[in-house]
Length: 319
Image (cartoon, rainbow, N blue to C red):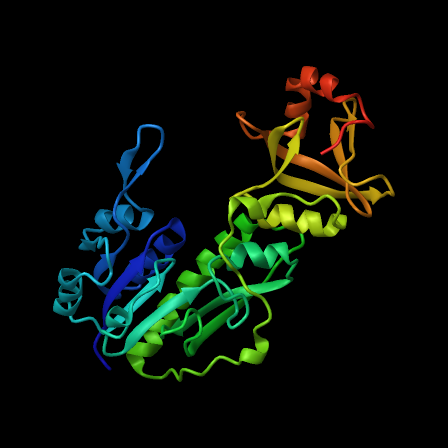
């Protein structure tokens, strides 16, 4: 098609905002935005809009917030907008009556190199598994989750010290560029969707729950290190110390050791707190004790001398 496509954008978190912003900056014709209903948040349970809604309203875009995606009034509103393309970034699973509506199609931006890491948490699992390469994919939505025909992909190298937060921010940027590129090529009609090669599907990326975030100190230190950075800054890997939960957001790989896993070695003079893993030490750098603020290990050791004394000076404490 030669004219600008009529685009409906669907998304919720900050990750999606960058793609919407980029579409507008590139002059694409976004006719409406769909996001989740406002939800109670914070101690006061005040109704809070999604990041996508906040940005969309700042750009004077019409916003639809259906409670149910099969709602007849919502579907009629979509039809009335006469979309050519629907762009989905970090939203909900769509019923066929929605994704089949546009005459060109509905495509999704996924934060992995599909078909690998299909699922809800591809960024976290890529870091947890120690991947050296990740990327983003645009693909046409079909009846199965993350299995539709591929449109475009962009790869990125993952440094050994990146957290899930670092990868999130990088993929948010290159993903926005890929969304615009995909729309542009769909408008021009010069893109050829191709089926996913299922032989390349090796890793699942399921949603992560609280119980999944407990650190297993009996694992090798490299595995524990990847686990911690794969859950940082959210939802946060955790352990227990004297029956109190401690979240760990940053760590460094230490020396070899045959010390029993979970043993804690504290050196107040050097401001270090090391925990033994299966094959060596891991030095904790940023942690958060239950009910307290996130702090560096230096501040933690300065502020919790009394508790450390209760735990034992060095070798008898354990996590």
